[in-house]
Image 1 (cartoon, rainbow, N blue to C red):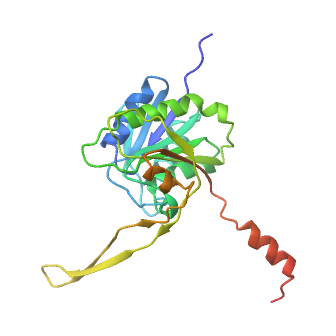
Image 2 (image 1 turned 30 degrees about the vertical axis):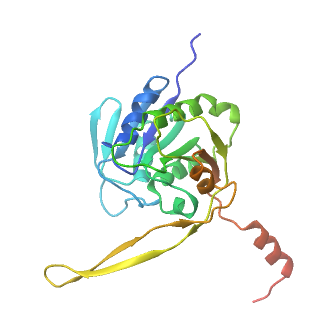
Image 3 (image 1 turned 180 degrees about the horizontal axis):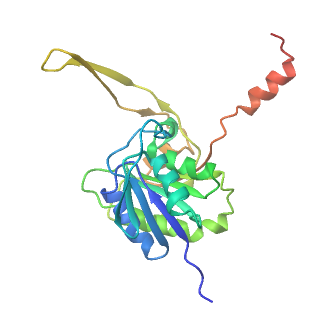
Length: 254
């Protein structure tokens, strides 16, 4: 009996029309039953937000591809509870993002948020980003690497509550071979607020700045900086267990 193909749901935060998700969709089609539900416009840094103050609309591109005017998390909710109502997807893959999602930036990322939502509802999930992406850069080899991970994923025996955050270095024209399992790094914030006035004299503000990273061995940033793919297993639970135990033992009264 032929082995059943996995049902894969893909999304992103850059928009359904971008190179990353297009190449990922085509690569996965060769090995899986793929459905795309992605935002109809860029939703970068939308984090884990849901749209609750207005209705959402879905547009069907074809039998396997849909867009919505919501966030990446909205895409997962709509897909799982509407399009996959009879049978859930076996996996959710978010990406391939045009740029990095490492360290503390995972809290802002719409790409990572889609994988978080998958982990919350018990579906194995991964977020995939190309750290060194530049406009026009090919995503074909990045998509091929994701397919290779997919073929091995079941043997890793991960709890669905754990999702993978994958960051690939820039494409050099050669297949991605080297990878390391890493821990989440730390970004040193150097953000700035640009304050200017529009042609009518009204003030406006633009959040800017460039990230700097602690180059700590074994972290996502340090690994990618060496030209190696970083695969970081993450969980949503933010509990500081060390502080929790210390506070319990302190017998504090208020």
